[in-house]
Length: 204
Length: 295
Image (cartoon, rainbow over all chains, first blue to last red; front, side, top):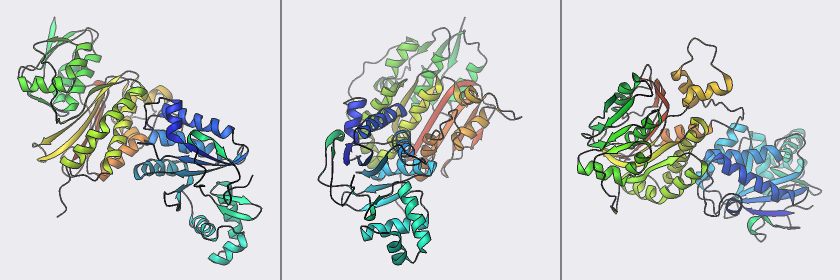
């Protein structure tokens, strides 16, 4: 299932309908809890597109409360309670300032998608992880042996690296192999309702 | 008996030390009259710190309004008297506020005591900040958001650490004395707990010979230490430092008996001043200078 969550709408519903800026820790915590409520409704395996397009300002405190704490809860643990992938969409330059700082602080990484559809891997990843992630993006769907062939990486290294990327929820693992995280352009629903079965993105 | 505290004619973070000096020897229950009659100019630091002074007094202090019409008028437009009336007995003529059209006041004196205040500050300042930062300071459009982020973070510092409310003000002016450039100045002042006591509230005093206000400022402002166990804490002021560094600005924090500063090349201040007259809380100032064209 894919869920499009308009973070600005969550802000207005959770905190105040007059606000358009994500500032202060209490605001960030309230928005994160609102997002978590959406995630509780979308099943055990899902891709959540967090859309920041309508967010004005994102300060460091809010970035820490929303982005870092969401990732730490769903991604950066040995046994996350659900298989949730995140794509961060609509980030501007100043959003990225705050987000990159908190990713560095907590040794995290995430995938952003730009308006033109191009994906970016942001945050703390090593060279092998970045190379493998980029190759998965180029190939669309691949097994470790494909990545090893394409990059010159040793097969064991490719397997280990893709496993790490999957555990960090930076690529999706499916029966057909590893696939990149992509936002589905047609599934935009304000406030966090979901659509299921979008082709090529995630199969439950 | 009332002790008269004389306010310098030009009031900024440096000259305010004269006021702190006069206050340091007084018991908190002594009645004071803050005499600003001969004051001709004040930075936002001066205005917000004057309000913080009143917070420290057990008996409601008095304030004598500047006699110079332009000065009093400016202070009125900056909403100083509106808030001063809540903490001071005001003597002298307070001008009626009138709309000034284009103003160098980016953000009037605004109380900061809860999260909603920060949302108000951020919502109110963005449009005016964009104009001033781009038109007068010749900075790139991308700086506006980062400027507002820095403002948000220093305001949050009051709410999270002061244990009481504070005030924020933002103003643009030409800084003849130092650089001849236009600058934008953010000041956030409170008379609350201060950095050292905030750190001690969770960890107690440090077991070191040198645990004082200066060391508390070094650890918190420069190294990102915080009283919270959450490892995500302490990023706000680090972000402010990065912003200030990128735009060649100045960032100073005074707390207790010490003052720490990120000093740019255009300024001759020292990074750390200690043994200052004691004053509670935290007094923060950010200065962003006009960008000169690359030679």
